[in-house]
Image 1 (cartoon, helix red, strand yellow):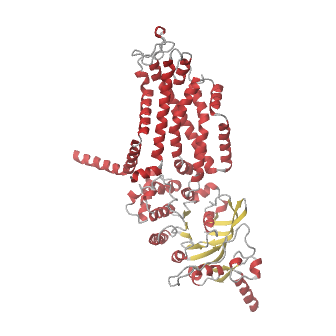
Image 2 (image 1 turned 30 degrees about the vertical axis):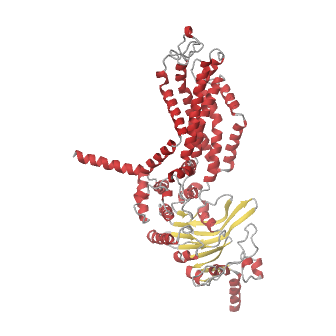
Image 3 (image 1 turned 180 degrees about the vertical axis):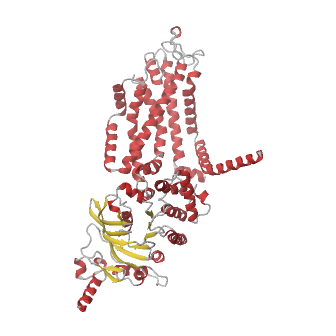
Length: 327
Length: 307
């Protein structure tokens, strides 16, 4: 799947919120792309946009979302409905409220089979139980008859994963799927997702603000700030040698075990108001080394090394100098 | 051979038992909750008696409710005529028994039409919002702008006096509050994560409304419905009393009161007994409705379960 120059805006009373301002990235087959950033930087909106489920008053104003060679933004709503759950599936953050409390989990897992594969209720139920077994849920048949409130948080998240995987999607969007779980369950879910990816060759778009989880799961990482992707590259490169000032500061914020007691590192300032974002680079008010160019003009994405892209004037200017020096 | 069959049957039964066990447990809890509330039990008893009367009233009546007997007109209550006779010598007790079916019929039909209608419209308004919401809600506003009794009278007057038209009139008056009630819950439910998850799974709009919105907003509707069953009965009797509903010689309860009205000073029994009957039935539904609210209130349930 490839997203090109995606712009999403929310038309609110207070003004137009430029939630996504030209986001481009690509998720290759069999690969996990991590999407990191602070709260409100547009991660979830990106996820919902790929399913074309941006809640009103939000709208996709520009861009292309290409899945298997077709632009999803040109599809009709009915075609889109068939894509959701079959080609692209999503796992939500909160497994507690993502299941309808009134129906058994077996019934709910059977739903996508009924929508997309025209299975009869009984067959769908059987497929649902098989699916639960493949999620390592013990006594799946009995579990399928439980209601959501009878399942633990980890169990519910596994059920959500099962639902998302029901129709073998080519892309799985995981919107912070482990945020509300405790660490041991987190590890189990992560293992499960890895196993599934190996088995079904699913591409995953993994949204998180937990750098540890990202390091564990992803092949490549895109860092978002205020509706822009500021840096994208290999997971090792991004986490070990980040180039963008924002990524560096983000990394410094992660507390380490041998850190002395005291205050945690923070990035000063807050995410800018996206109704009137700062001119030039959107990060410059919080950046440690802003220049005059940063305040005036939007930086351009440059390739530092193969596959490692950064949008920061620091590198553009260096490259320019290098180029002119060569001349 | 036979033993084998028996064992097979037994194991099937056991499996079935274990499958419905959670439901049984819920049911048992419900029964327990309602047993703890004597008033609700009284309500339930009255309703049960009323329904039995509606079904078997015609057979139980000691006299033919339509036969005139001018010799024994305006008889006071006695062992021969339990509730006395009316101005045409008809047995009031028999007419009362035979008239029970009209009230329950109107009550059930009016609610059975207006609740699904109102709920569906409310769910559509709440889920889709925007222009749908605006159109549906403004329509309910129009209906609710009239005093409802006047509106019901106007509708049945326009359609002509008959029992069917009273039902139509009551349905017209009855659906808007349900639409508003369901809309309000639908508004909050449409933002729940499971609705979003269903959408992301490729569920159609109809499916979301019927599977997620309606079932999750139905419990206030059920409570309101039991509380309102009594109201529908009062209203239909009221409309009949005013001459819009059942026509003579039908023994509809409102009708009985109208007919006895002229003789109220000489023969109090003609109006009093149908009046008491209406009072009891409505009281029964209200008491039961209150009890049902307790059963369906998950918070209260939890408290009882813990005890």
